[in-house]
Amino acid sequence: MDRARIALIVAALSALGPFSVDTYFPSFPALAAHFGVSEIEVQSTLSFYLAALAGMNLFHGALSDSFGRRRVILVSLGVYAATAVTCVLAPDFRWLLGLRVVQGLAGGAGMIVSRAVIRDCFEGAEAQKFMAQVAMVSALGPVLAPIIGGWLHVWFGWRGPFLFLALLGAALWLACWLALPESLPLHLRQVFHPGRLLRSYTVALGHPTFVLLCLALGFGGGGFLLYVATAPDVAINILGLTETQFGWLFGPIVLGLIVGSALSGRLAGRIPPVRLVRWGFTLMAAGAGLNAISNLLLPHRVWWALPPLCTYTLGFALMAPVVTIQSLDLFPRNRGLASSLQGFVQTLIFALISGLAAPVVYRSGIRHAAGLLVMMALSWLAYRSSRRLVGAAVSRPTRSE
Image 1 (tube, one colour):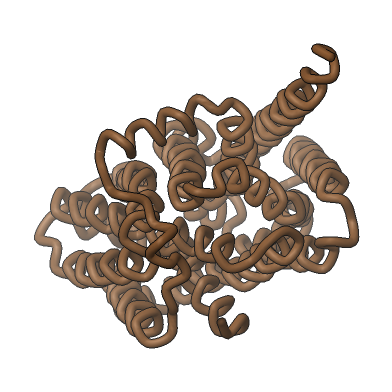
Image 2 (cartoon, rainbow, N blue to C red):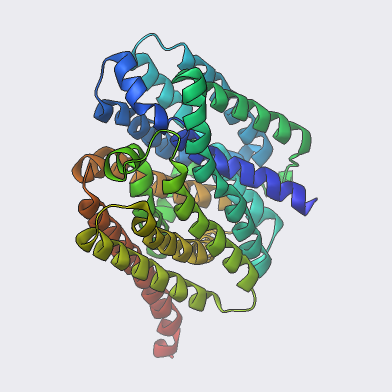
């Protein structure tokens, strides 16, 4: 396989999620005015999208285990692009909400299945390095999406971002059709049967180490995703930015993700994975602590409010590829299903943050900082607990002897 081509396509598929979430943020006030609803109600278009995304994430990977990675990606991208076009024509807010749900059902296949593609093709440190490279490229999505969305809003109004998403989905479909090979050969595919699928999910969800690793990733990402979910509030109401200045908020966050992913890839095979994870959590704790201090003691200014978030995301990106590989390797014959559950947990946490936590922290930098601290602590506790379980499993035969 052409490594560079696969990396580019997989990274683009992974970036579709951030674009689906962030591109229309600058249009929140205009959407509220157009449909005659509040900005909190407009926030529900994100919550419903994420809830649908989380639910369908349970099936994308499992379907790809049975029918192939390429086929599942192509079908989902076609539905995604068609739904994005229809959002432009929504006659009222309920239609827009429903269409975002359908878009969420289709929008996660690229991110979920692409992780399985990576693990199909590469092993060990090479898989970690490849995962980090993809994360580094796809991290451009969150910083580019709101900037592009801001200018599209200025030029075309609230419909501009949705038209852009339709074109992006169509372009990705064409790229996958032309250049994405099938990474799962026929002899390795699982027979699709609801009963067998249910048993596989039961086994995975009954594996405490796997669940804890998924929670570690979900809570760790949830810390900075709290700021993503409330980006219009943070950027406009707290930091005083305009619709075309969202890059000031997303830039430091994504810079940390890119640098951390680059370091994780460069250090793969040179530094023990456990040490990379330890460094990652140390940086996450430092970023969350500095963020709390700056919000307590300093006025809200971009120059000192956002560097702590950069530190946090750098730490998360340093440890995330390692934890992702650790969880996928627990189910080597069902990596698509494992990736689905991984994505389900992460997206469900994001949806809960968007729907439940966002109204609580709205218009308060201090409450945002407290949320980041809580998410970081939960992530560390989950990962620490998973390692204790692994240690206990390794030592158990020794004691029996």
